[in-house]
Image (cartoon, rainbow, N blue to C red; front, side):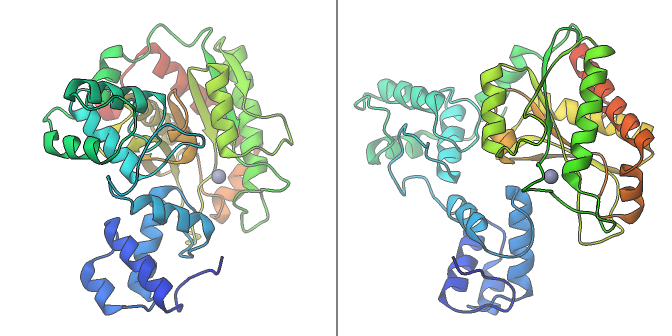
Length: 364
Ligand SMILES: [Zn+2]
C-alpha cells in the first residue's frame, strides 16, 4: 500500500484522522485544524497510537499500522462475530469480552481475540437470555448485551478470577520457563545502535546466559523459543509457548529511541482496557527492582501493553528491555560481557522472587 506520513494529504489522510479520533488519540478540534492534511498534530497522535498498540512508533501509516487502525475503530455490533480461523480480532471483540465479563459470563482474557472461551461465554449468555444458542454475536445478542451491560465496581470477573487462583508460590525449582531471544538476524536485527551493535545479537547473548543461570543456579526447566539463527514470528513464538505448556515466558529485547540521550531499564506486561495481568505486573516490578539495583540504570518503569506476544499467550509473559541500544553509552555496556552477566543475574533473581510468591516493592 501507499505510505502516509507527515506532509501527506487527501481523502485517505482524512480517513486516518477520523480513525485516530474514534480510537481516542486525536481531538475532534485538531482533526478540524489539519483537515485532510497530515500535520504535526496527526503525527503525534499517530505515534502515541502506534506506541500503545505495540507497532513501531515511526509516524508512518504502512500496512501494519493500517491494520491496527482498522482494528481499533471497530465498534461492537458493526459486524457479526463468531469462532473462525483465523479468529476475529479487534476492539469490538475486546468490548464484547469486557461486557460479558462484567455480567459474570467468564470470557477469559480481554485480549480482543474471539476464541473458544469467548464462544462459551456467548453461548452461556444466550442460554440465559433465551436467545437461540449459536455462539454467533448478531443483532439480537448485541441488543441484549447493550441493554444489560452495566459497569461493576470491582472490575471484571476475569481479574477477580485470576487473583482468586492465586499468584505462584513454592519456588522456581522445576518450573517450566520459556526464554525468548527477541528478533533474529538475518533477516531481522531489531534495533541497531549508533556503533552498529544489533539488538538481536545482544538479546541472544543475554538469553543464553540467563538460561544457564536459571538451570544451574535455580534448577528451573528452560525451553528456548527458537533455535540459534532460526527466524520466528511473534505469533509462532506465542504458539510455541502455549504448546509447550510453560508457566512463564521471559522475552528479551532492548529499548530504542530517536533521542540518543534516552536510557534506562523497562519491562512490559499484558494489560488491555480494564484488565491488567496481576502476574505480569508483579514480575515486571521485580524485574525493575533487580535491574535498577544491579545495573545502576534509570528506572523506566513497568508498563502494561498488548504486544502480540503478550496477548496471544495463555500464561504470564514479560518483555524485558534492560537498556537503550540507541544510547551510545548503554550500547557500549551492552557489548560488555560483565554487563550481560549482571543483566542475566537480575532477570533470574526477579523470576525466583516471583515464584517464591514475594510481593514486589510497587505492591508494598
Ligand atoms: Zn525488540
